[in-house]
Length: 248
Image 1 (spheres, rainbow, N blue to C red):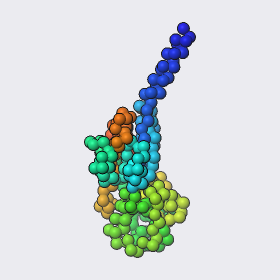
Image 2 (image 1 turned 120 degrees about the horizontal axis):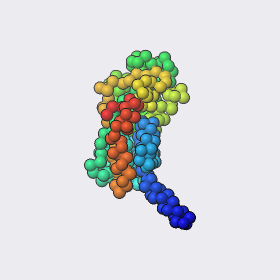
Image 3 (image 1 turned 135 degrees about the vertical axis):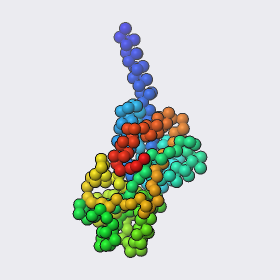
Image 4 (image 1 turned 45 degrees about the vertical axis):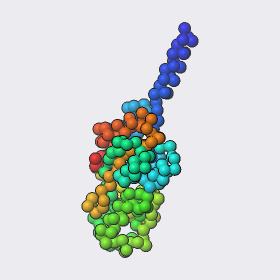
């Protein structure tokens, strides 16, 4: 009798482990905090887990091309997933826009920015941080803003580039740059600025930052990849995404 109960318990344990699957997700660095919150809810609701790798979209693209084991990509743009689709590295029909990002000029100093571009135009700072525009869509958007404002030449020698938007944020947070362009989601939650001072860049000053998700070929046979993408489209994920300043 005891042996039968033990065997039944072992079968149940094995079954629960078999059902608890993982999905490997490559995530644009700007979406780090929202993804961590969404992944926690997804695991709570489904029993499945997300194994996330964060980086600049361009770097993630290169890793996918070189065979990285990612099953889903959450990009910081729409062009990279479209390119992967065209290269037959994505699952056709799985691509959708999961968030539209906002760019913000941010300083860790509470009174440095007054909600406008005045300090940027005054050009009294030594360093202005941006993400690498060749790898990070938010970095590219930052260069578009500087072009539109006629400041590209004036600030050229003051730019410090992070490999991705997380490193750009760190330059500013540590005081190595007085100010810089980051994703609004890095400094904003639940309707308010978490620290420092900021100017939310008007959307018309740069190309819209539409962030697309895509199931990659390596995730085609993993039902957890499809389940995670469905969850990303749901109300709970949408509420988290919007709480970090993204629009849908």
